[in-house]
Length: 157
Image (cartoon, rainbow, N blue to C red):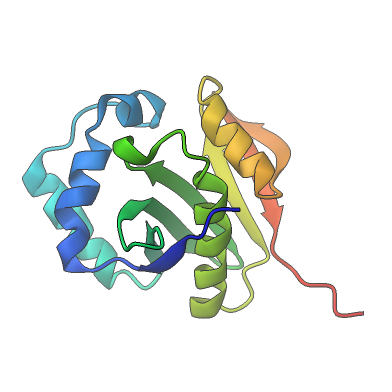
């Protein structure tokens, strides 16, 4: 597996995440396909950094170059995960490591997260494969989305 380092997002990451979000492929694979205005993104990003139930994880390679973002929305003992690999980093097989390292950071920030769930468009086969490779299992589907779940509990017996 590729070496991926993760850290929490900081204000300096706002512009990169904005550019990645408005990438054509990203928009096609997102639940919301419209372009996002810069001001709207900046407001969302600032609020996200303050939101105690949201975790934005920046993934970097061994040289410190940004690979992408893993986004978690935490609700009770569950977290919803999404991932966006930077356009210039796609196709390198880095998503699995971003997902697993992102979950490790999630676990260091939140106690008792039992299930991590991904909701993916059927046509987004790259994400489906990345989540399967990261030990997510197919779950009950939500409307027009495919769902995958990761059991985030450790058996101590």
